[in-house]
Image 1 (cartoon, rainbow, N blue to C red):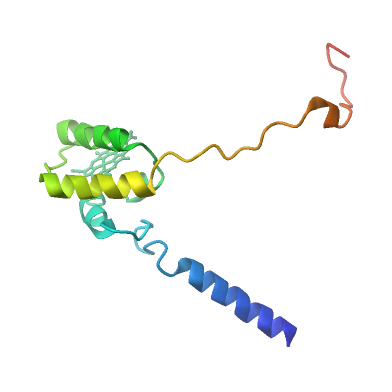
Image 2: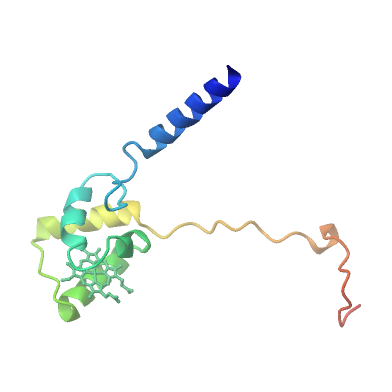
Length: 118
Ligand code: HEC
């Protein structure tokens, strides 16, 4: 009984997390203008190139300009470009550092291997 409940709860949790979060087809975060980004940014390469990158608005614009100058990316009208940049800036901004601070040396176990300092 408890088992059935746990399985159901887990399934619910997963479906809630998957629903409305990312587009299963492209992996893009579903948010305002995501379809515009999907349409314009997955024609030449996998949308993974977008989703695995992060950057400031300025950096995204630089990447777009680079693709326009060297990779045949078409020009956007100002409204489209603003919408794409709004989406990228909001959803693929640089992530905050997620590593914890190192442990204080005094809290570390004794190093079993000989070191220069002993
Ligand atoms: C006309 C084709 C084309 C379109 C459309 C396109 N790209 Fe690209 N993009 C490229 C090419 C070519 C590369 C280089 C791929 C490689 O290195 O394998 C690239 C690379 C990238 C990179 C990696 C840049 C790096 O520094 O490694 C990102 C991020 C990127 N594109 C994002 C986008 C976004 C966002 C859009 C939509 C605004 C987009 N692309 C639309 C052609 C395109």
